Image (cartoon, rainbow, N blue to C red; front, side, top):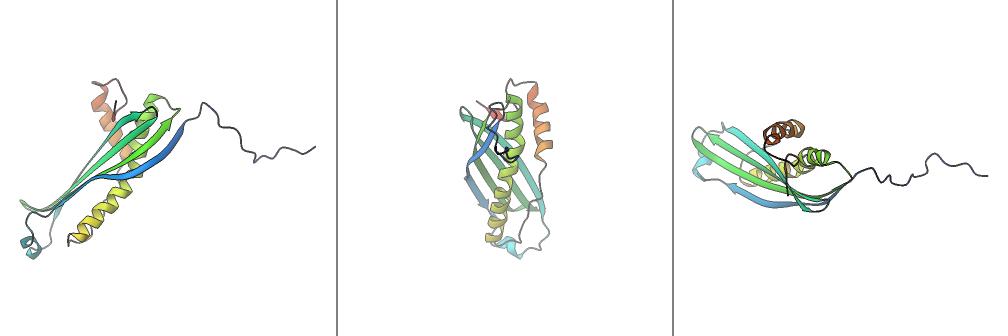
Length: 164
């Protein structure tokens, strides 16, 4: 009689959750250089400000649309050099997890997947706009999620970052 192999696949436990990327897409892109071409004659000494936000909504049972907005504003003093805004989005299948875990996944795992796409788009836009390459620093989405959760906990009955 043959012995069972230790590498035999076990059937999927119905209690375990599932996570899958269905689609990653760009929802909106904007790049503005309000003072071109004069801005190119100024000395390159910019101040960079990045704002990032994340929203998720339920499309249907176990299917979520997550939109990350990254806004980068570069200035010289009072003058805006350029403004780049990306709405990087993804559709994610998430099932078999408690609501609080789904909320955390939508606020941390999904943005971690989307951010490299947004970072690449910003770098490409800035370079194509005639400026030195701008590489966005990594973002701690866990800390952002915790901060957002504290703000929403008092006024919401669903997980932070999720709209129904």
